[in-house]
Amino acid sequence: MWCLELLLPLLLFINASCQWNVWLPRDISAMTNSCVVIPCTFMYPSGIRPSRGIHGIWYFGQPYPQLFPPVVFKSRTDVVHESYKGRTKLLGDLHQRNCTLLINNIGTEHSGRYYFRADLGGANIYTYPDFTELKVLDQPNIDVPEEIVSDESLELTCYAPDNCPDMTPEIQWMYTDYLPDPEFSTDLVEESNTAVLSNTLTFTPRPMHNGQLLGCRVYYPNTTLAYERLISLDVKYAPRSVWVNASSEVMEGSSVTLHCEVDSNPPARIAWMFGDQELLWDTASNVSLMLDDVTPANEGIYTCVGDNGYGIMNTSLYLAVKYPPHEPVVNDSITVVEGTTLALHCSTQGSPAPTLTWLKDGQLVGTITADELSVLTIVEITPQGDGQYRCLAENEHGRASSSLNITVEYAPVLLEESKCTVVREGVQCVCMATGNPEPTIEFYLPDLNITINETDGRYNFYTHTDGHTSTGMIKLREKGERVDNGSPAVNVHCSISNAYGRESILLELQQEKKYMMAVIVGTIGGVAVIAFIIAAVRYVGHNNKKENGNPRQDVVLENPALYYRWVGLPFSDCLGLKFCVMKKSYSHDKTPC
Ligand SMILES: *[C@@H]1O[C@H](CO)[C@@H](O)[C@H](O)[C@H]1NC(C)=O
Ligand SMILES: *[C@@H]1O[C@H](CO)[C@@H](O)[C@H](O)[C@H]1NC(C)=O
Ligand SMILES: *[C@@H]1O[C@H](CO)[C@@H](O)[C@H](O)[C@H]1NC(C)=O
Ligand SMILES: *[C@@H]1O[C@H](CO)[C@@H](O)[C@H](O)[C@H]1NC(C)=O
Ligand SMILES: *[C@@H]1O[C@H](CO)[C@@H](O)[C@H](O)[C@H]1NC(C)=O
Ligand SMILES: *[C@@H]1O[C@H](CO)[C@@H](O)[C@H](O)[C@H]1NC(C)=O
Ligand SMILES: *[C@@H]1O[C@H](CO)[C@@H](O)[C@H](O)[C@H]1NC(C)=O
Ligand SMILES: *[C@@H]1O[C@H](CO)[C@@H](O)[C@H](O)[C@H]1NC(C)=O
Ligand SMILES: *[C@@H]1O[C@H](CO)[C@@H](O)[C@H](O)[C@H]1NC(C)=O
Image (cartoon, rainbow, N blue to C red; front, side, top):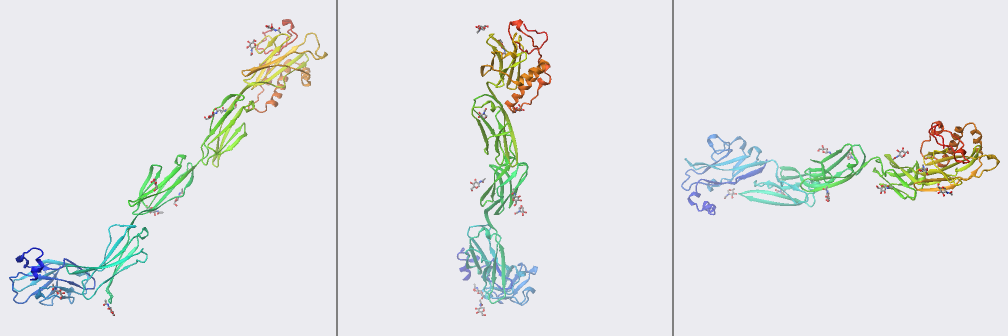
């Protein structure tokens, strides 16, 4: 009847159903030192009529009696295996086909398979191949999900077998004080006549709970039996902080280490990026980027990116590379015409940004700027604007400069030293002018309607050029009359010219002691007179021009005979003129006229 009931839902194998059959749980568990009841019912073929009662044996380990498995329980005798002595009791009534077994004071050595053998007398002895696998636990089991992810609700279930009728377990979670809003729920699941008590802890873990210990405690009230299991939470979380150095400054040529530390679980793939370029990566908790011999090209934003599959995060820093100014770039040297307005550009690089200063011939001009570019504007440049312009770039790490020369071309300007003076032999006229290109000097004698210039070899005419200053000299001798009888009537024009202009001036006659003295000395020798005059002119010119950067080397004074020769011939015969000129001459043989 019972047999039918049980199998009816399967298939109506009525005959087959009442064969050798046993029903016991496939698995059952118990805590150490507690007890376990293995529920068991069995069937035997309906044809068998047990004559001398029904007996049963429980074996441990294996079903084959010939291999002498440990006897757990035997209904015929008390003889059981040592380890089961006094511990086992058959709760079921074999005549009711109930083979339910109690094992007390259970130990881990009792873990294993339990087989039931029915003894119905005679040859009707049968060991059922089905078995119960007993697990004896000294710790409760905790169900932990394979992956615990931060900010996602987590359920942890702790299990305790409840198969000992005298003792009912209870479950407690430990170390839950710091969990956010933990919830607990107990449940009792009965299956195949076995029961499992469970307690489920529900909460939402945060990154901070990674590595935290949690415990489950199973105990039996009013006993000393208690069991604990501890677990450490492995909470996966996306990078929650990416630490990098503060932005920093380094000197060009030095080396620097940029450090990045990522807080994540599992460790992230950490990459150092410079712009779009990935410089370095590693899967670790920190990665250091070494930059050797940094150049200005290394300056910029460095980003450390942490990615561990649960999320991605980055932090950046700015690396500034300090270096002394590079040689400034300035315009090429140029030649301009007086009155031109020009802008000189100076640019350089340096870090920190250098200051730019313009110097002309060593003197500060213009303002100091801290821009990348400094423009010096010269409005309507004058001859004084001629010179060397230097742009100086400076920062705290050094200085550099570049220069250019500006040559100013201008129309000739007569210098005030130009005049005629009375000398012993007559009248000497000096004409001085500056200009760029250096002016050409000509004398014009209107009375004679005659122009004398350098190439006019017939006259004793002398010119000299020093830089932008030209000097012309002519000496006139008056026929018959004595000079000291009174001022002679002198009508000498000086004409100065270059590409930018021409000017003609009537030279005034002056009596100057300096030249009178020169005349006296001059009697000693014409060369000495010339030398003196050149020296005087140069002296005046020096005062006038100031420093123009050209080294002064008085070649003429040192060896005047090499270049100039005193001819000093009276030319009255030649041209019927009452004057005498000093002539630049290259040969003794060249006689005027
Ligand atoms: C077998 O015996 C046990 C113990 O007396 C009892 O709790 C259980 O209900 C019985 N099983 C059946 C199927 O009658
Ligand atoms: C434990 O013992 C106390 C008295 O000592 C009793 O009141 C209580 O019901 C017992 N609890 C259990 C679960 O047996
Ligand atoms: C970055 O930080 C690390 C660790 O604190 C340090 O060793 C390194 O020198 C720092 N680098 C810079 C450029 O500050
Ligand atoms: C950096 O990572 C290494 C291993 O990758 C580790 O040994 C070291 O302690 C870490 N340093 C820091 C500051 O976290
Ligand atoms: C860093 O993060 C910001 C914001 O999340 C993102 O816009 C940027 O593209 C990231 N940079 C890199 C280099 O990944
Ligand atoms: C100097 O160079 C700049 C830039 O090349 C240019 O604009 C400027 O006209 C130049 N100045 C002169 C005087 O040549
Ligand atoms: C400018 O002139 C000076 C002297 O005349 C010369 O030494 C220097 O090299 C010149 N500089 C440039 C840039 O031409
Ligand atoms: C000067 O001479 C030129 C020819 O050489 C002549 O044409 C001119 O008229 C003369 N001038 C005077 C003022 O005599
Ligand atoms: C000097 O005058 C002559 C004739 O007038 C002329 O051909 C020559 O070019 C002049 N020389 C100079 C240096 O001006």
